Length: 302
Image (cartoon, rainbow, N blue to C red; front, side, top):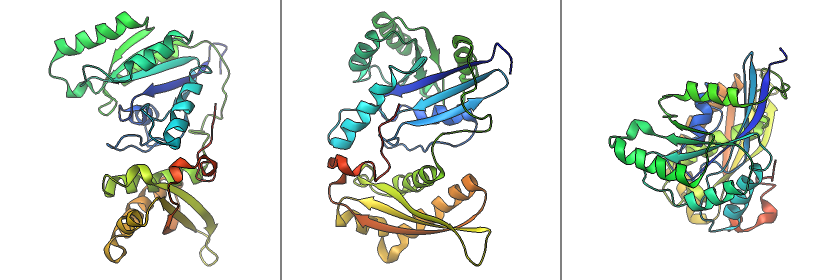
């Protein structure tokens, strides 16, 4: 590590489903955070660590900004705004396929009150056919805030993401390596396992389920008879008995599908054989009970 080694903390913000987690996974070259076409997939603040010979970038993936409708939503929005005062750079992602983001006013007002440098990242350019419309949208945003850089990318296709990564490195000041070189996140394995299970619930269930679900890892134990096998017990938490029925499915088939898909991802994550024992529990209206958030894996950070 030389004296010119650079490091810094970078917050990724933007509306729900704009592609923040996809961008993060593209930067790291592997699946660290879960993704879904359904809004508010990311609920917790997740630190993802990119390290090479010249720099260490600590990306802070945040929940999608949205108009909160319950206590969990207010918690998520508050968590996002807290990150903006404690980072070296902000990446504000917008959707290239839209003419206006309903949260542009809120975000740009917040940015004006900060001294934190900000890059405007226009994502999903792979979906664009009307270039003039896109240029107009970008110019409108530029007139409202003095961005330190503007980038048009596709996080999904990795278009121009390497150039963006290089510009982020160039923007940061010399600094130390905050985390070990091989470390990819500061989140514990239990969190990463729970997220992979929740992702499969989002993928397989109806629209009424996604925002009502949480996952708790009850136990991770080495099998007594087979030391190479990990036994994982997890509970899928929902708010109503009707939702429990949907997740279990007829004859338990839906829960079995969730478990089968999740098991593959967890196997890739841990690199060891696992037995996944899934259960479903009902905690009525848990999203409006802040005293439960910590036990369900939501903690205020940064």
